[in-house]
Image: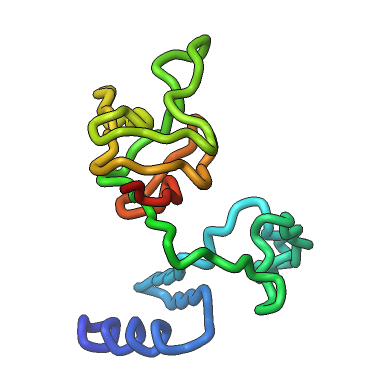
Length: 157
């Protein structure tokens, strides 16, 4: 089989719903598998054809999509303080220490709000303006993404 025919077969399989393709003749043996063919636990083999086993999925209460009527009404005066990096969020300097801030606390410019650990480096996130903590949006030791909201605050003064 020449290279051009092999490339044509690959393109055909890529654009099809087939997950696995096998061809064999006296001189040549070709097996093509898409990523979907490598689903480990959910495959039962019947003869030579793998078939996926459907699995029930549970949706936690947190991950459900809220209906518009359920959505919380957000105060227009609230400002999001967002993560400047991908990191792990810590509310306190150590597991036995009190958190830097609690809901209802008023903080001054420069006060530490939390620690963001990235690559074993502890980075203190400081308030950029005087504010009151209205809501803490992430849990202690939770992984956070760049630009993810961490706090909702109301600017003071």
